[in-house]
Length: 183
Image 1 (tube, helix red, strand yellow):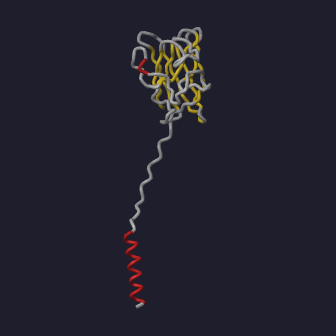
Image 2 (cartoon, one colour; image 1 turned 90 degrees about the vertical axis):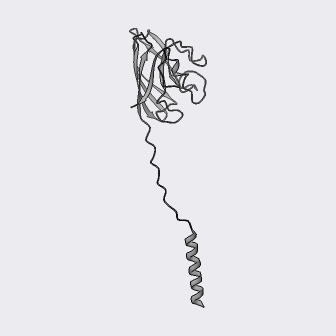
Image 3 (spheres, helix red, strand yellow; image 1 turned 180 degrees about the vertical axis):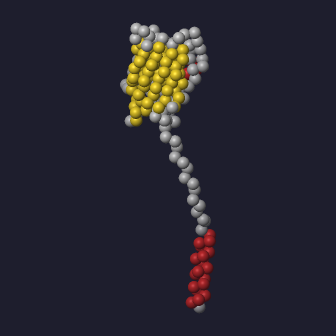
């Protein structure tokens, strides 16, 4: 009798094991590629003008981005300088670049003063019409997230950004435009 009871228990135990679904190991997806740490924008001018420029972007971490700005052919003085939401500089007046990059829906203002991410203030051309400066901005990165600027555009305006008029600072026509591309 003991042998029969042992056999029944063994059969039940094996049956329970047989009904248990077999777990299969799922492959672990590869981690996403790291965000680039450098990018650039080659700025072109409206047709028939001789303005040009280059901007190098370096992600310094901790939410800070360094920009090395080199521009030529500008009227001496300050010029509005912004990141725009669309990476398209094909239109004659660069309207194809859309409005200012504003992922957090903030008001326009001066950089670092609770303004939107596209606000970079002004760059000032010297008496020869050149800009050669480095600035640091916050609130943007080179990743694929909502604050990522790769694929957006940089626009230089004809006039000074007053840092308060909504939505874009009253800085006049767009005179230079370039798409931000990862390096």
